[in-house]
Amino acid sequence: MSVAEPRRRRRDALRAAPDGAPRPAAPFGRGPLAGRVLGRVIDTAAWVGCRVPGGLAHGLAAVGGTCEWALRPGKRRVLAHNLSHAVGLPPDARRVRRLVRREMLNEARRSADLLWALGRREEFLATVVLEEGAHARDATRDGRGVILAGIHLGGWEVATAVPAALMDVPVTVITADDWLAWAIDHKRAEAGLRVMYRTEPALRAARLLRRGEALLMLGDDEAGGEV
Image (cartoon, rainbow, N blue to C red):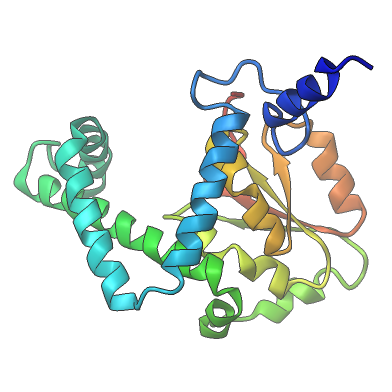
């Protein structure tokens, strides 16, 4: 083996997605290596975020959300377009503009909650109230697979720990196949979730259900184009 061979293997490993396969079609700066770097940032932020008092964390999030609102006109336009349909007003209406700012602030606060939930999983689960959760567990007792379906509303990762804590069988979540998903995959695994990328063959999902496991599907997050 040449001296360069181990170096090449390490380089290839860094360029592989969490499933071990490369993603040569990923956009520049948003490939597996970028996902790994972002994953380290998430780890550090979660370590800090779960140790900051809630009031201070949300205060800092509000500052960050306001800065994002001021510096990202493109995102403001997209949100205005989407929210205008929800309230039946033109995108440039004053009410829509207020909603855009509120949404960006809420998104920042949600990020603060996510960091706390990732770093304090047991404390988070202690705050969760599940209604009729026994029905989901009972559905697997005859050996049949179960589909846990819901809408992709907000940052669902805040509740990453809930499905595995609820179910008595392995739970696999269908997610996007991009650098953002790769960055947080290890946190999903730590919370007891298995991952299936939406670019994988649907036959894998059928096999999971046939084995009596649970498949978590969240609105648009389980559908979409390839990287």
